[in-house]
Image 1 (cartoon, rainbow, N blue to C red):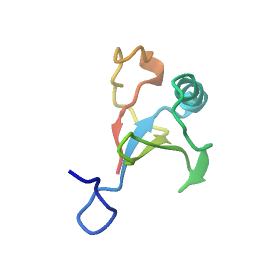
Image 2 (image 1 turned 90 degrees about the vertical axis):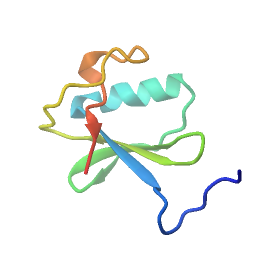
Image 3 (image 1 turned 30 degrees about the horizontal axis):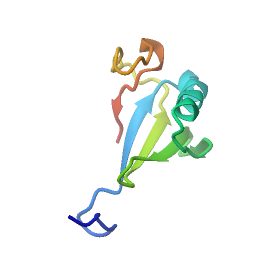
Amino acid sequence: MSPGRNGAGLTTATAFSIPPESLGWWQRRLAELSVHADSPISRDGEEVIRLRDPDGLVLDLIASPGDGRSGWDGAAGVPAEHAVRGCTR
């Protein structure tokens, strides 16, 4: 099957909430795993790290203050205080 192309009806990005104080941890973690990620940018008052999965889907890690959900801790050695909280928006 050929890769998808951006266009109508295709998901082009997925955003995940992380604790704001975890931005540096995620930058280091991605670098250690040789995952290319853009430097954080400010968007709508929140800091965002953007990367792509192996199929080219954009993944945004959004520093979301006030997200009280418990994280997906214990997965792949991610400490609870840095764990992804879930999808955003």
